[in-house]
Image (cartoon, rainbow, N blue to C red; front, side, top):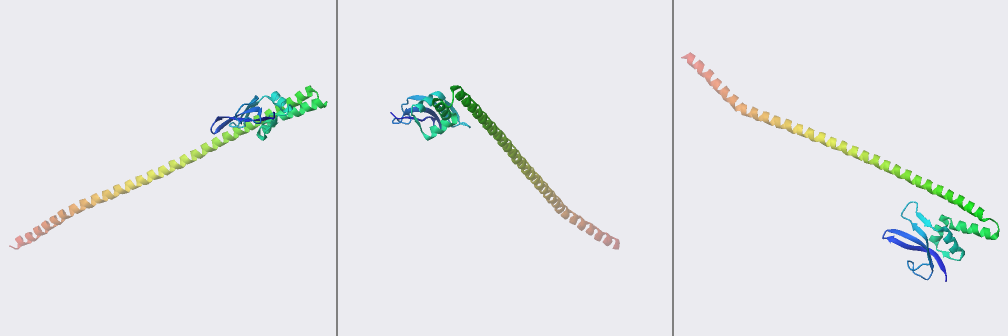
Length: 201
């Protein structure tokens, strides 16, 4: 029976979550499997991989063939390295203690690299948030400045309208006063004309 180490899809639409399984190559992708070896969550950054390394090595030693994606995950987790080191023990090149020492050193180095990547991502995220905040502040200041200009323009327009209204009122007052002044002048002229006529008599 040909056995494959492959991914079995779970999770919801748009948020996939995978089980890493050893299954008969003739079974369906999400069908029956022989053993669940671990999980793979690509939704996090970096991706979260939880894998049973010893059982994965045993399946590889029995002849199980990983798919391309599963091979990349096994390599990333150190399964292929451990299988290679164990083959060195069978050939007499290494002792089991040396295998564990080398593998543990590799795991520690890998964990350091992953932590560094997480820190870099956190720093980039913090910088992006700070830049977005600065951009939003600049937009708000520009909006406030534009609103101040609009307020100044409306105040100037209101002052101009009030001045025009005051001029119109003054003009009306002048126009109303003008006929009265003309009437007074006519009365005064008539009075002056009557006065010389009385003096002549």
